[in-house]
Structures are given as structure tokens and as C-alpha cells.
Image (cartoon, rainbow, N blue to C red; front, top):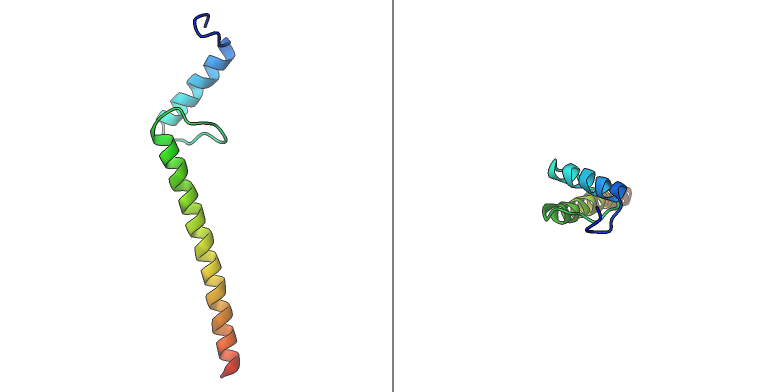
Length: 72
């Protein structure tokens, strides 16, 4: 890889990551090479937040139902 100045091992890592991304897998803790991966990563974050928020709402609902039943 004389042209780029990158070592052979670096180029091999980049190639593996690129091939992995083409198969649809998001790289863990790495900057994405393909244009789809940043969008996938953002959607995965949104999904994680939505699931977390849903769990919080379930717990709050259970709390208020229990609290409301105690008042009856």
C-alpha cells in the first residue's frame, strides 16, 4: 500500500469492515465506510431510546394504577 502510506494490516482491516458493512452489519465503535451505516446506527439509537422510554412508561403506569387503587 505504498501509494496511500497505509500498512497492509490497516488496509486488510478496512477491507474486512467494508465487506461486513456491505452485508448489513454495523461496525462496533468504528466510523462507517458505507453511506447506509450511519443511518442504520442512528435508527438503532432511536430504537434503543424508544424501547427505554416504553419501559419507563410501563413502570410509571403500573405505579399510578397501584397508587390509584390504594386511594379507592
